Image 1: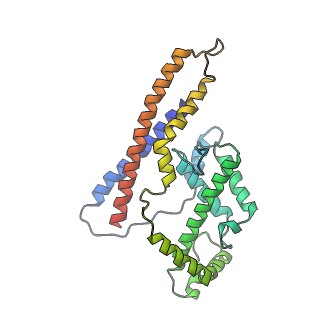
Image 2 (image 1 turned 90 degrees about the vertical axis):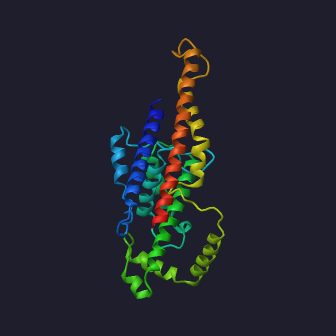
Image 3 (image 1 turned 180 degrees about the vertical axis):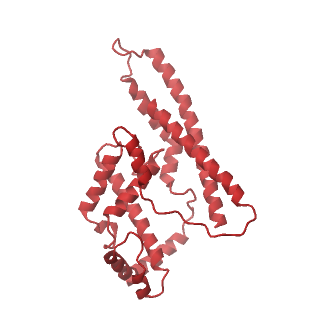
Length: 281
């Protein structure tokens, strides 16, 4: 019950934050001299460290479904944020692709995430961590390519090293981004992107995570809390008899329906907010 309560509180706080953002957006939309919006700063992981210190065992909760290589639920953002920082600290960019990153670096990333979150050390968990790390590494590589394209000559590019990238890494990337194989791959990806039928407008949350949270997350949480009763059969050693278990299940079911409604409303608000920011930029 404590886990479910923390889940509901976390989601309600998220809703309150999004609602405040939407209200402030209405104020900003009044006719005013247009100003350049300051971009979001790079994730440093300080908030995650603070949250871990507030927990007795120093670990945060997150749900990894057994049939998907994604993190879901209220702890998913913490998982991705911490993993993003860990990838930046361990996976260097002096190689062409994520596959070329050393096994030692990947093992350090996995070990840190297992230490930071309440997750079981299984093959599926490790694959989920590395799959998400791969996406984050590619996203960071894409941002570095955007920085590369800001400058016209190789000399200018080499002189303007991005933040958190060493001189050796940046020199490698400048040569790599300017190579013919990369240019062909980039052109091919641009064509494929233009053919994409559905655009993602829901922020950092993936289609898979949204689908899971709206359809399967309540059932997963229900099974977790149901198992807290110990066994399905009442016994003298178990203080919960059949009637109490049935009543508890009904209460939990009502709470899950409430959680699912909150998730749906939160999803709608995030989409509306993201769309507004996209149109106003």
